Amino acid sequence: MTLQKSNSLNPHVSVDCVIFGFDKGQLQVLLIKRGGKDEALALPGDLIRDDENLDEAASRVLYELTGLRNIFLEQLRAFGDPERLEANSDIQWLNSVREEPQARVITIAYYAIVKPGKLHPKPSSFASEVKWMPVLELPMLAFDHSVILSQALHHLAASLKKEPLLAFEMLPRKFTLRQIQKLYEEVLNKNIDKRNFRKKLQTAGMLIPLDEKEVGVSHKPARFYQFDKKKIKTKGWL
Amino acid sequence: MTLQKSNSLNPHVSVDCVIFGFDKGQLQVLLIKRGGKDEALALPGDLIRDDENLDEAASRVLYELTGLRNIFLEQLRAFGDPERLEANSDIQWLNSVREEPQARVITIAYYAIVKPGKLHPKPSSFASEVKWMPVLELPMLAFDHSVILSQALHHLAASLKKEPLLAFEMLPRKFTLRQIQKLYEEVLNKNIDKRNFRKKLQTAGMLIPLDEKEVGVSHKPARFYQFDKKKIKTKGWL
DNA sequence: AAAGTTAGTGTAATCGTAACACTTAGGCAA
DNA sequence: TTGCCTAAGTGTTACGATTACACTAACTTT
Image (cartoon, rainbow over all chains, first blue to last red; front, top):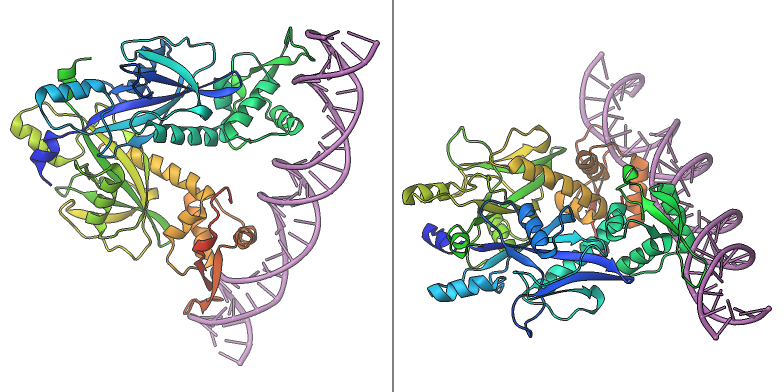
């Protein structure tokens, strides 16, 4: 091992966040454009700062982008092919100014869940454009972000089967049984039997029925429910 | 964000490998000492080189340590508190020579599985001492390696429930039904009913019975089996 | 008032899981 | 050689979980 070499080209390390939301019956992901109009969409992310750990860096990216704190956020995994393109245009600028060889970028991917309505995307110092995109009809993303996103999606589906908590993170505070079923159908990409699904929800006993119903719908109005946080069951319930 | 700063202190990035093996009825992990006798045990690891991706770096560490290739190897997750101590003594030396502030080390943890008997630990350029230790009776490890190991162990148990393949990676080519059951009992840390366990193995149909039995044991000799790689079932079988 | 839409509800068949005990084959010691 | 020790090997029953399946109720629109 050449010490000199391994030090001189220490990689950049960034976090990238796959931010999921469920709205209009579709699973959505929050994407940005950093610079010009015709740039590819990308996952929001930033270089890690010296004084923050990985989780804090991801939290910060989320906060700077959305203004939200206390969001569900977990590390997915690290990505770092040496051929990975630069994940931050600042770095490109920096390197071109210095005429140094470009250091690679290793990124730690996180996935996050935001309740619908909590977030009204707007441009920031990070991103000239910010918007929700339905995961099922995505264009190509910048860098290796398509790979990251598809792994995050896979992971989300696997987690949803084990942890009902995640489902409730994706729904508004009050929701109907139909909404939660649609969420599962969308993410797991299969149809679920209504009666069996409700039976299992009842057995789990994590729902508080409210004395409130849908209004203005042209069919029998559904009852609203709330999630009972005291009764989380986390293992294998679907 | 200060560009200058974020670049000048680019973190070091390393891989650390949690190498599991199952021998003498116990789950073991391969640990090293880098330097002196009274140093704490540590997970084997190294800085990532410029020309390799993360998986390759982990593979290389494994190869340099054990001489083995084509080992089961998967990324666990990244660890990177800013307070993380140096994970490579070369770096400390380097930094002290240059009188630079120490850059933090972010590490990508991997876990690997090695069949018993494949590996006869011996010192290398990495490590002055290399040895298998039973995971249930470990001393404190260097840096944050105890945390990494415990997460790897947890992950291993979770994976074993889903992927029988992992079990077969841990066993020799020929094994008895008792061996595979003991493996599960050790990793999942609970007793398993013999008849039910065998029934499930049969249902899964991944075992090829051999015309060979234990010899020299002071009880009814058990039949040997082989794993049928063509019939892997990977989802939820235990 | 009729048609359209989703809410809401129970039962029977099937499958998987869990609990449980005795006979057999070999080594070893008296 | 006999008896004892040890682990191998083998089925059945009870229980719980999962699946499949169809009608009535409430509200809106035309």
